[in-house]
Amino acid sequence: MRFKILTITAAILISICANVYASPTLSKNSKGEDVITLQKKLYLIGYEITEIDGIFGNETERAVLAFQKDKEISATGVVTNVTWRALQKAKPIKGRELPSKMTTKIKTVKEPKNSNSAPINKNLVPYGKTFITGNQGLEIVATAKNYIGVPYVFGGNTPKGFDCSGFLEYVFKQNGFVIPRLADEQYLLGKAAKVSQLSAGDLVFFTTYTSGASHCGFYVGDRRFLHASSSRGIRIDSLDSEYWSSRFLGARKIIVD
Image (cartoon, rainbow, N blue to C red):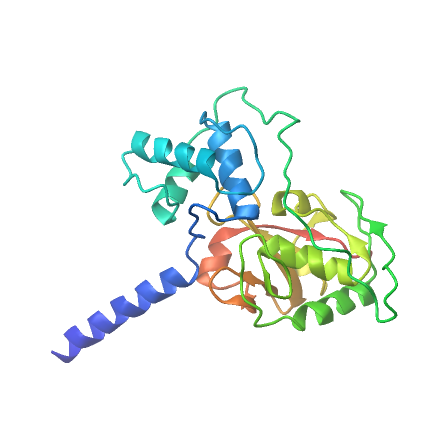
């Protein structure tokens, strides 16, 4: 009897752990980067998407319903783990690319200001190059740690709530740097590096609910990273955990050696 209780308890704990890092659930009126990822994927695999704007409206709902019916998934129009997994497996139509006019339109916040209420210096960040010093990396991590505990919000890029790439964008702005808004664009920053080569402030990326860079965070040292978890908000996790190690995509070194 005791063994049975322990077995049931273990099963419950496994279920809880699996749900901690569940893919984001999207439905009508959801907004943000995750919706953009969804819209891009639906378009590339052949569904009717005419505007990629990060807003889960009628058109996106119709495309989701059509996809769910085609894949014999419960047609609810709500995107949960089951639909994300099916989307991840779906192959893009050969030769189909996103038209240049289908630009993303997530609304951003006003430029943050320094303590003297003067606009910060905009240092536009180049792709493929290191661009900050080690001391700046430490300052960026210190800024990021101030927001530990802030909740996760779809499309969020303010202290009221962040998504993963919105968190990176906001922290960089607070330190005088302007970076791209989306995770797959942020993955082009800096240079590819091994974890052993990273310093505090460098970036780490993961493949979670869709292929490519769909999650990101700041490396803080000791094989740990600071990020916006979809279930627990801003927190520090280990790169060596079973979940994150299996989804690690790569690291980008942005700090000048």
